[in-house]
Image (cartoon, rainbow, N blue to C red; front, side):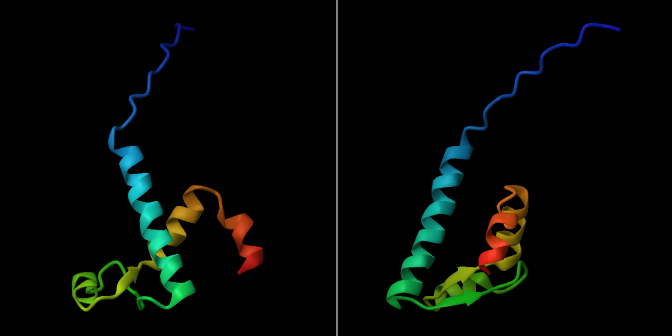
Length: 82
């Protein structure tokens, strides 16, 4: 059996920025829910997010959130609380 080469994974530079961007997005929505400071619109992936943002809404994409929970394996922890 030939010797396998170790695969070196290159870190994607945008990863940390994307994590912060997403964290800020969800923290902003959490604050809006708790304080009532802004309205939140649920939008599908093909919905008019730009129009909703232009009208002052924060936009929530449930499909994306569901995919994120599935990919990070957090869904099984959170389903009992739903």
